[in-house]
Amino acid sequence: MNPAKAVLKGLIRGYQRWISPLSGPRCKYYPTCSAYALSAINIHGAIKGSILAAWRLARCNPWSKGGLDYVPLKGQWKPGPSERLTEQELTAYWQALDAGRSGKAMHIVETALAKRKAEAGAGPQHS
Image (cartoon, rainbow, N blue to C red; front, side, top):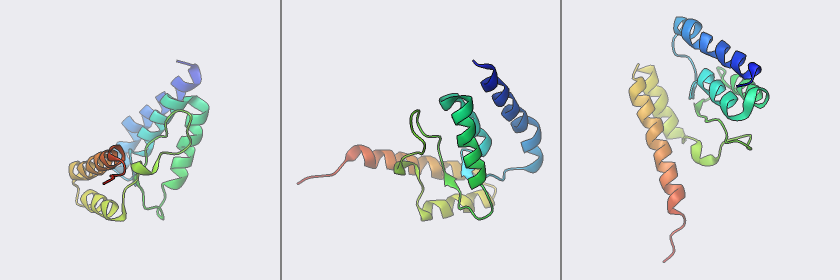
């Protein structure tokens, strides 16, 4: 692993372990911004991963709807439309989080993603 990548990942893990627990769950996205940053650095390297992480942090603000936002695949800059939640799914996700039911919120995300993958795999039906 290159030194820049190791330092960045160490800083993020330090934040996750010592700082994030003090403020509680606040991220409007899944995965959380820090988990997104780790994945971005793992997939894209220190430079592009840092750019993607900074862009994610800029989007995570009080005016953002948040939702499902995965790190794009290697060679891409943004995830595909199959990885986005509908307005109804977003509402259910945030209601579950607000009620302190993070397990239910994760179930909503996982179910939505599985549904999108199944729809994408089915393709158009011809009669």
